[in-house]
Amino acid sequence: MLFELLTFPISAPLGGIVWLGEQLLERATSELDDIQNVQKQLLALQLAFDMGDISEEDFEIQEEELLLKIQAMEEEAEQEEQEEQEDIEPEEFISEDGLSSFSITVLD
Image (cartoon, rainbow, N blue to C red):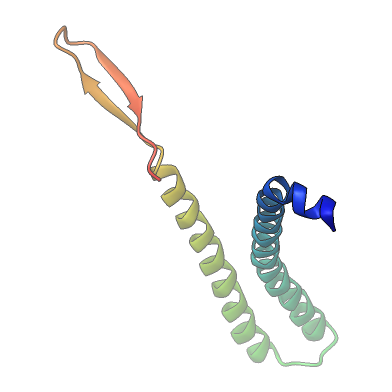
């Protein structure tokens, strides 16, 4: 108990960093699992159609819904990635001698 109290100023921030890392990992995993789950549903739908459990019309309707869902998820992920990269886009400046130079602006 005394040891924990003495090391608290060091262990508390480290514990917070570990917790934050776990939260980020959990969120990334859940987002990845969402896309994988929709792909698994699409595979299950294909198997059901191949086995004759559903009609071709039902298969096409459900397949289109799942494909649109996958496409929307991928577009959302790309948009988030672009937004992250926009925060670190280089800015071009033209100096007095006509030469251009770049600087990177980091937004917090």
